[in-house]
Image (cartoon, rainbow, N blue to C red):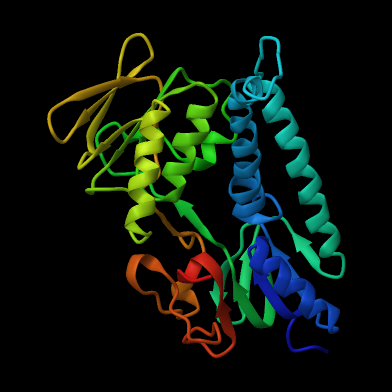
Length: 306
């Protein structure tokens, strides 16, 4: 009788977890992989892939203007947000199914797994044991802790909006905030982007940051640096009033935060396995992705590294 139910247990069905699980299974290991949302993780479902589709879609708003300079005479263009969302969902579902096929040699368990001990996880009331365990649960957007934070959406929500807002306020100066500011602007939304620092995209080349800010403003995006919201209030007409640190107020139809991400570890019960966590809750792992527990590994956003 085998000492463990599985040779290898993977928690998280994103890019890293799926890759590791299927490679292990291809070498003959008995593998179980747990995913409590949709296969493919952040990148496929609420990250890189749908974001690129939104970027492509938003750029077409400039096509009629540019085409006219080359002799094209085009009729009135009309955009349907509903059509874009439906087609995006169809493409993501196709990718979800591809990920499932890649895992055909693994036991796929669509439940939330948490540690019981260093060799045991529990999901939906059932326990599973494994000789080795990999944590690849990724990360989740952070919502600023301000009064009215329940009114704030994050990047994940943007991919499932029923309707485009007429106005949006985006807080955050990383690439996610900058990308969505340009995406919404391309779809005709009135965009205000605020950032607490002197200039967004910290860590990128200064010349590029300055040029991008100039270009975004030329496209009608209201950029406000050294700004942060301190409170969000819902108005009687359904709009929102965002009070800023300088005492001013911005009235908008939607408030989005793109102020960072944190490791998705809350429901893992890492303490039951004795796994050490570092700053911000990130799992501590060495250069081989091994945690302080000999048989447990961690990869990706959950350790803050690619």
